[in-house]
Length: 302
Image (cartoon, rainbow, N blue to C red):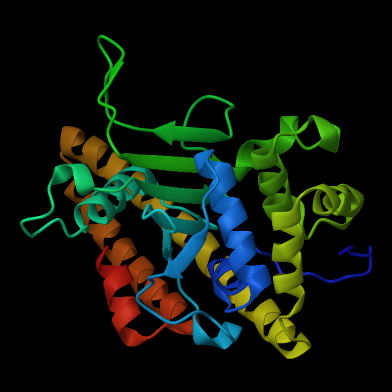
């Protein structure tokens, strides 16, 4: 499997494309998911069941909002894999919440079961934009431990993050000097960068799982490509708008603090009016994104 410089590929960092590639009912898609998970948890596993709350995407029109791939390995481990193109500042605590739900969702009721029957659980988040941790490390694995004495609880739940925004120092390394996890990260980040097409092909050649993911990717029809090109443009505009709204809200909060100190109520009134206009524009942008009314209400309430 090789891509030419003329191939116009869909950006796998978008949630719907990521889900379509890794949840199709094909040997390539299932094999790619097993290889990806095995690489990130550093232990060979075979994904046998996808227990997501919606069927896999067979057509990109099926799903336009963020979606997690919840699956179970052959030996019982529970894994939640997700790609987030534009994560919010609250992403770390969100991951902690979902990691907890994944772990406690196991059924150990019954006379023949106890806490020892709990299986390992992994919350895996591939974050396309922004930096969440101050270091330059791309891959982090978090678990319970005593920070004062540096003693691990040896628990069975893990949060694994992959920050694609930190790959600048890695992408120029020779492919044979990269780790398998770095191969996957480079594939996700630079797949659509035609200047890096040769490096992507070298990675495909040496990584069976990435070759499988590439095979699954090219099964997406040309019609879907045209549809998704427009969809990604709208999503990009929505993401940009949300970022600007967040920054303006922060600025307004700072302005309000100054206003309280100086007793200027007029500035506060203007801030409220500006907030109303921004919220109106935010609702319009969400409606244009193609989401259902239920999803819009849920996202807007956040």
